[in-house]
Image 1 (cartoon, rainbow, N blue to C red):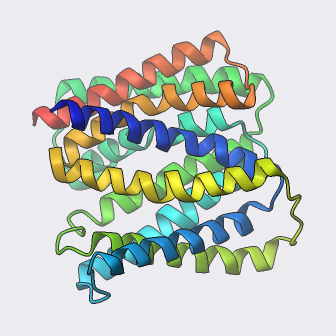
Image 2: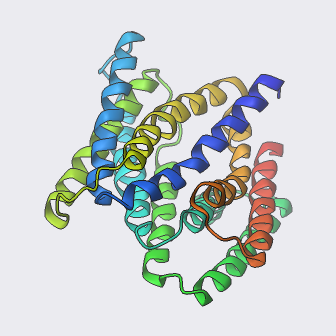
Length: 288
């Protein structure tokens, strides 16, 4: 892995992890599903516009249309939708930690459902992930974290796991940026319908809300997606996914720095163990 890929991987992990803090800022002043639907609509316009400028086509393969819908439903409407709702009651650092377990879930369900072989290093990583999450959850739940909303975070991570396992290889055939833009429109439509049913249009327009909305739309929404596909094209999906091991640390650190969220000793220990578990799983896949 060259220095440029290493630097871009660190930037990607930082941008991905920061999305939870900006989301927490947004839901403090706006209905979560309404705000997210608007974010996806704007990101979709940007994504499709960029794809058109790059000469990409709306004519996708059947596998690509399938990927567009599955990611629009599972990644955008369910994963991010459930996380946005959860963060009305759950701290950004806790949501980031739970979301970071997705690579562990992918490895586990790949093993259970698809009979993928796991090396001893990966099995150790899965066990470490469970132990680390248990330590964090024990401290947070005893500190008053809402069990129901924490469960939404785990359901969100599970939805992203389903999307990841369902659309393997669907990025082949080109038109990647077009797929990214179109799946954002799918998420926007599904969330808009849900918001009309369950939410009221009550928004407290503040400079922080406007700044957080612009940031989460452009940086985690568009730029991080572009960096991810650049990484996959340069070093491959398995090596690129290794950078996910930084997400628990970055997620907690950014939330503490910008939101003033407190970090307990149990959080630090749990994050270190989960981080090690994710790294072990990803290194095992890379070795394979």
